[in-house]
Image 1 (cartoon, rainbow, N blue to C red):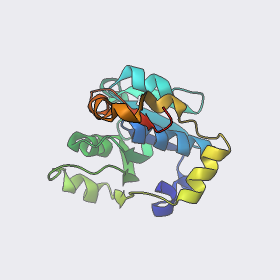
Image 2: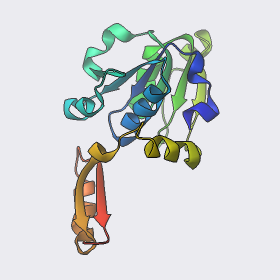
Image 3: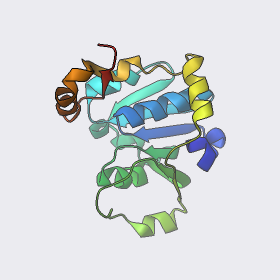
Length: 177
Protein backbone atom coordinates (compact mmCIF):
# COMPACT_ATOMS: atom_id res chain seq x y z
CA UNK A 1 0.00 0.00 0.00
CA UNK A 2 2.59 2.59 1.06
CA UNK A 3 5.00 1.69 -1.77
CA UNK A 4 2.27 2.07 -4.36
CA UNK A 5 1.60 5.67 -3.31
CA UNK A 6 5.10 6.79 -2.35
CA UNK A 7 8.63 5.53 -3.09
CA UNK A 8 10.09 4.76 0.34
CA UNK A 9 13.17 3.10 -1.17
CA UNK A 10 15.01 6.44 -1.19
CA UNK A 11 14.38 6.93 2.54
CA UNK A 12 17.12 6.14 5.03
CA UNK A 13 14.82 6.17 8.01
CA UNK A 14 11.08 5.85 8.46
CA UNK A 15 8.95 6.39 11.53
CA UNK A 16 5.57 4.76 11.98
CA UNK A 17 3.24 6.44 14.46
CA UNK A 18 0.74 4.10 16.07
CA UNK A 19 1.20 0.83 17.94
CA UNK A 20 -2.07 -0.81 16.93
CA UNK A 21 -2.50 -3.55 14.33
CA UNK A 22 -2.08 -1.16 11.42
CA UNK A 23 1.04 0.53 12.79
CA UNK A 24 2.73 -2.76 13.67
CA UNK A 25 1.94 -4.23 10.25
CA UNK A 26 3.22 -1.09 8.49
CA UNK A 27 6.46 -1.24 10.49
CA UNK A 28 6.90 -4.95 9.79
CA UNK A 29 6.25 -4.62 6.07
CA UNK A 30 8.65 -1.67 5.75
CA UNK A 31 11.33 -3.54 7.73
CA UNK A 32 10.90 -6.59 5.46
CA UNK A 33 12.11 -4.49 2.52
CA UNK A 34 15.53 -4.13 4.13
CA UNK A 35 17.87 -1.19 3.93
CA UNK A 36 15.57 1.17 5.85
CA UNK A 37 15.81 1.99 9.54
CA UNK A 38 12.23 1.67 10.87
CA UNK A 39 11.12 3.20 14.16
CA UNK A 40 7.69 2.43 15.60
CA UNK A 41 6.38 5.10 17.97
CA UNK A 42 3.40 4.50 20.23
CA UNK A 43 1.87 4.95 23.66
CA UNK A 44 1.51 1.32 24.79
CA UNK A 45 4.72 -0.39 25.94
CA UNK A 46 3.22 -3.88 25.66
CA UNK A 47 2.14 -3.33 22.05
CA UNK A 48 5.50 -1.80 21.17
CA UNK A 49 7.22 -4.86 22.62
CA UNK A 50 5.41 -6.99 20.02
CA UNK A 51 7.19 -5.14 17.24
CA UNK A 52 10.60 -4.70 18.85
CA UNK A 53 13.17 -6.53 16.74
CA UNK A 54 16.59 -5.96 15.19
CA UNK A 55 14.79 -4.44 12.17
CA UNK A 56 12.38 -2.22 14.15
CA UNK A 57 13.30 0.18 16.90
CA UNK A 58 10.43 1.02 19.25
CA UNK A 59 10.00 4.26 21.16
CA UNK A 60 7.31 5.47 23.55
CA UNK A 61 5.77 8.68 22.17
CA UNK A 62 6.58 10.72 25.27
CA UNK A 63 10.25 9.75 24.89
CA UNK A 64 10.49 10.74 21.21
CA UNK A 65 11.16 14.44 21.72
CA UNK A 66 14.79 14.04 20.61
CA UNK A 67 13.56 12.65 17.26
CA UNK A 68 12.00 15.89 16.02
CA UNK A 69 12.97 16.56 12.40
CA UNK A 70 14.79 13.22 12.20
CA UNK A 71 12.82 11.11 9.68
CA UNK A 72 12.74 11.15 5.89
CA UNK A 73 9.27 9.58 5.94
CA UNK A 74 6.67 9.37 8.70
CA UNK A 75 3.75 6.96 8.35
CA UNK A 76 0.78 8.10 10.42
CA UNK A 77 -1.17 5.01 11.53
CA UNK A 78 -2.49 6.07 14.92
CA UNK A 79 -6.00 7.01 13.87
CA UNK A 80 -5.87 10.07 16.11
CA UNK A 81 -5.88 13.72 15.14
CA UNK A 82 -2.80 14.31 17.28
CA UNK A 83 -0.91 11.71 15.22
CA UNK A 84 -0.73 14.01 12.20
CA UNK A 85 0.55 16.93 14.30
CA UNK A 86 3.15 14.58 15.78
CA UNK A 87 4.14 13.45 12.27
CA UNK A 88 4.78 17.11 11.36
CA UNK A 89 7.14 17.32 14.33
CA UNK A 90 9.07 14.19 13.37
CA UNK A 91 9.51 14.62 9.62
CA UNK A 92 12.56 16.35 8.14
CA UNK A 93 12.14 19.41 5.94
CA UNK A 94 11.38 18.18 2.39
CA UNK A 95 10.34 14.84 3.87
CA UNK A 96 7.04 13.05 3.48
CA UNK A 97 4.11 12.05 5.63
CA UNK A 98 2.07 9.04 4.53
CA UNK A 99 -1.44 8.98 6.01
CA UNK A 100 -2.68 5.41 6.59
CA UNK A 101 -5.42 6.19 9.11
CA UNK A 102 -8.80 7.77 8.73
CA UNK A 103 -10.09 10.17 11.37
CA UNK A 104 -13.50 10.82 12.76
CA UNK A 105 -14.28 14.50 12.26
CA UNK A 106 -12.01 17.17 10.86
CA UNK A 107 -8.29 17.24 11.60
CA UNK A 108 -6.63 20.53 12.54
CA UNK A 109 -3.01 20.99 11.53
CA UNK A 110 -0.37 23.62 10.83
CA UNK A 111 -0.54 24.21 7.08
CA UNK A 112 2.26 26.79 7.21
CA UNK A 113 4.70 24.14 8.46
CA UNK A 114 3.83 21.93 5.47
CA UNK A 115 4.47 24.81 3.07
CA UNK A 116 7.60 26.25 4.69
CA UNK A 117 9.25 22.85 5.14
CA UNK A 118 8.01 21.60 1.74
CA UNK A 119 6.49 18.46 3.23
CA UNK A 120 4.89 15.96 0.85
CA UNK A 121 1.63 14.50 2.17
CA UNK A 122 0.40 11.25 0.65
CA UNK A 123 -2.82 9.40 1.39
CA UNK A 124 -2.52 5.61 1.31
CA UNK A 125 -5.43 3.40 2.14
CA UNK A 126 -5.03 -0.22 1.03
CA UNK A 127 -2.58 -1.86 -1.27
CA UNK A 128 -2.72 -4.84 -3.59
CA UNK A 129 -3.43 -8.19 -1.98
CA UNK A 130 -0.85 -10.13 -4.02
CA UNK A 131 2.28 -8.65 -2.45
CA UNK A 132 0.72 -8.82 1.02
CA UNK A 133 -0.19 -12.48 0.62
CA UNK A 134 3.32 -13.21 -0.66
CA UNK A 135 4.86 -11.60 2.45
CA UNK A 136 2.60 -13.73 4.64
CA UNK A 137 3.16 -16.96 2.67
CA UNK A 138 6.94 -16.55 2.77
CA UNK A 139 6.85 -15.86 6.55
CA UNK A 140 8.49 -12.46 6.07
CA UNK A 141 5.66 -10.92 8.09
CA UNK A 142 4.34 -12.58 11.22
CA UNK A 143 0.81 -11.86 12.38
CA UNK A 144 -0.11 -14.58 14.88
CA UNK A 145 1.10 -12.44 17.79
CA UNK A 146 -1.40 -9.73 16.81
CA UNK A 147 -4.31 -12.01 17.74
CA UNK A 148 -5.43 -11.13 21.24
CA UNK A 149 -8.10 -13.79 21.55
CA UNK A 150 -10.15 -16.36 19.65
CA UNK A 151 -13.83 -17.17 20.21
CA UNK A 152 -16.14 -19.87 18.85
CA UNK A 153 -18.83 -18.61 16.48
CA UNK A 154 -21.41 -19.11 19.24
CA UNK A 155 -19.47 -16.50 21.27
CA UNK A 156 -19.81 -13.83 18.60
CA UNK A 157 -21.39 -11.23 20.89
CA UNK A 158 -18.69 -11.72 23.52
CA UNK A 159 -16.04 -11.52 20.78
CA UNK A 160 -17.34 -8.14 19.60
CA UNK A 161 -17.40 -6.87 23.18
CA UNK A 162 -13.82 -8.05 23.71
CA UNK A 163 -12.68 -6.50 20.42
CA UNK A 164 -14.02 -3.13 21.60
CA UNK A 165 -11.89 -3.29 24.77
CA UNK A 166 -8.96 -0.92 25.10
CA UNK A 167 -5.60 -2.48 24.23
CA UNK A 168 -7.02 -5.45 22.31
CA UNK A 169 -5.47 -6.01 18.90
CA UNK A 170 -7.34 -8.65 16.86
CA UNK A 171 -10.15 -10.94 17.94
CA UNK A 172 -11.01 -13.94 15.76
CA UNK A 173 -14.22 -15.92 15.39
CA UNK A 174 -13.47 -19.58 14.74
CA UNK A 175 -16.12 -21.24 12.60
CA UNK A 176 -14.92 -24.73 13.49
CA UNK A 177 -15.37 -24.48 17.24
